[in-house]
Every structure is written in C-alpha cells, then in structure tokens.
Image (cartoon, rainbow, N blue to C red; front, side, top):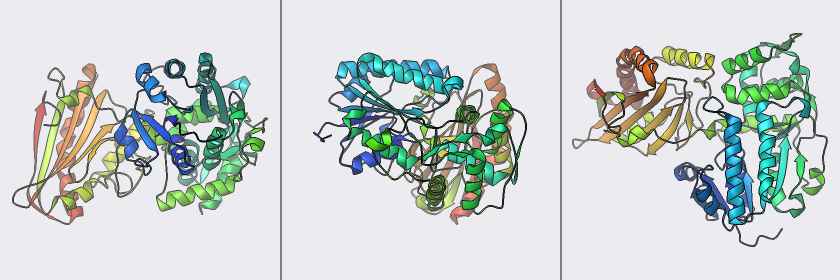
Length: 502
C-alpha cells in the first residue's frame, strides 16, 4: 500500500505491544498518531519526539475526543486491553471501549481497524479471551474492515509470559507444576508480532480477515522452561508434574513467586491448560518474515534485559492519573506526613539518589519491612516489590517502581509516586529536592493517603506510627548514598486535611 501522507492511529501506544509497534512504524516512514491519556507519558519514550509522530491526548471512553483523534487516519491499531478486573467488570469495560471506538471510527470515516489479541481453544476460552473475541466482533459492527491477529503466546523481554517464566525458573530449583506443563503451545517472538502488525498496513488484502500468528515451533511448557534455564545459565530445573488440575492454586502460586499480577496471570494459566496451536498459516505467505525459534527469542529477550534495553513492559499499562485531592480539594480528608533533611551539597547529588530508588537499589532503609509489605501485597494478589523498575538510573512518567507508579517527574526537583499496592484508599509518596540560598539542599518526603471509608482510616492509623521509624533513617541513608554531610534533621511533621502539594 502506498503511503499517501495520511497518519495511522495507535490506541494503546504506551502498552507492551504498542511500545514496540510504534517505533517500527516510524522507522518504516509512516506518519503516526499516538493516543493516550497522558502526553507526558508518550513523550518520555525514546521515540516520543520523532518528527513523524503526533501525540493526541484521548481517553478511549470519550467518543468525541476519540473521533477527532481518528479524523483523517487511514487505519487504527486497536491495542487496548483492560487488565485490571479487580477495579470493575473488565468485560463491561472492554465492551464500552469497543463501542466507543466503533462510534468514533464511523463518525471520523475510518474504515480499517487492526486488532491484536490472544489465541485460545474455542471450546475452553477464558473469560478474558472470550471478552477479547467479543471486542473483535463489536469493532466490525460499524462497517469498518477489521483485521484480527491472534497469537497463542508472545515471547519477549518485559512481556507477561517471559516475566513469569523468568521469575519462576529463577526462584525455584524444584518446581511443582500441574498437568498443563505438558500442554503444547506455539510461542511467537514479540519482534515477529509487530512485524506482522506493521506488515498488514502494506497489504490491504488483510483487511477484514482473521489470522493466527505463531512461531515456527510447537513445544510444551516444560520444554520452554528448560530452554530458558539453559540460556540463562541456571542449574538444571526439576519439574515435578502433579496428577491434578490445581488451577486456582497455580494462579496464586505464580502470583506469589513472580512479579506478574493476578490480572495477567489468570488468563495465561487458563490458556496453558489446553493445547493452543495455530491452524491457519495464511499470514506467512502474505507477510513473509524470518520467524525466531523459541531459543533465539529467549536469547534476544535475555540480552535486552542484561543490557537494560527493554523497550516496553507488561507493567507499563498503569494509569498516570492523579487523585482529585491533589488539586487541593478542601472537602477531601487526606492524611499526610512530612519528613525533611538539610544536606551540605547541590540538588543534583540528592536527585541522583532519589531517581534511583526502588528496584535493585532498594529503598535505602528497612529493606526487610519493604519486602514484608510487598510479600503481603502479593499474597493478596497485588504487584508486590518483585516487578522492580524499568531502568536503574533514569525515571520517566508512567514508569513502574516496585508497587508504585511514577505520575509526575520534574528533573532535579520532584518525583511523585502513586501506590498500586492493594490498600483501602489512595496513597502517594512525593520526593522534593530544593536548593536553598546558602548553597545547601532540602530533601523532603511526603507520604499522603486518602482513606476509603472506616477501614481506610484504620489502615492509616496502623501504618502511620511506622513512618517516623522508617522515613527518618531512610533520609539519613539517602544522604549517605549521596555522599553529603547532614546539616540539619531529619525532622518530621503531621498534617491532615491539608491541600496536596503544600
């Protein structure tokens, strides 16, 4: 297909697949519109300032705004998936987003939608995969030609499947597993997935078709785990298959020993129970490419992890929205503590310590207590500490830091984190670095919490006494890590019903 200057719109541009597809489209010369709820999150990506990139701020549920985002586009990539069923009925949310997209596409005159989703056994579809299939049907209701690409399993650094395999193999020498370990699958490398997606634009005959995309090999999960252990240089892993279908236990156990949340693990485990193999290989003739074998895909993924070059992650999909009370709503009942310390040095030294927090660096003090909180969070189905952070020494809008999400970054002066751990309320943790007239620097930490009902207040009353025990020594250790002398503090204060950001 000729590139006539019309852009293509990518919905889900900062997600796992979108974050890989978008730079490939730009590399091939396409004009791209990246839609997201945060323009700063898109701009923080390495391709965020490309001359052929247009950023549009749009919520997929806002049909009017989505219509304007689609206007003049030759095609729309639909890469949106609701992955937080705990927040609301995910099938209903999927349905609402799909209908919003249909109405917007019809109003804007877009007649081609390219949809990527998973492939499952039609006789035993998981609830999430059944919802994804329904989305494909809804997208076609408005008259647009819908191309569907369905993959059994995607292998790539930062992907949910790879993260699960990496953590599971790395944590356990002897693995007890249910019978699905001997089920067959057909993994495809993420690089091949985005090649297929981009290739569809060049082949208009793919419009209106459903394709199954898989790699060149069919193997069992047991074989896949052993390939990973071999390439990661791990000792031989012993897999003991239990003669039973311990479905719920598998989900709980995987959540406990891997950084992947229950919301992502559940559809993976449900898909693992059955043989999932591509029966239709037409796409290979239409969009020919060199398909990576599983071993090569794992080698490539491990190399990206070791070099710190993970282009996108399944953890990137968190929202960067701020609670309403951050704007200083006086009616909000917000609990807040402040801790500060004065350092003998420039702001740059303090900021260098702040921006490295979390992940392998840790939280400078009380490592056991942080891990304990993360362990409890994982027991309850939350992310815990194990997902780490994207980069060791850089922090950007939308990044994940253990069980936090970066919702604001002002270089050398401010880092604001929103908790994604399970808690009866909304929690923020802010770091501020401010140069003082005498050449010293103030480093300030502010945990804040808006409780949800009575139990939210109880939660705060329980954890608040630990703040002084944790955060004062933490500031001292941060000063030590920065290599600067403490001039004053740490000191603390307590405020309630105060506007956030004061």
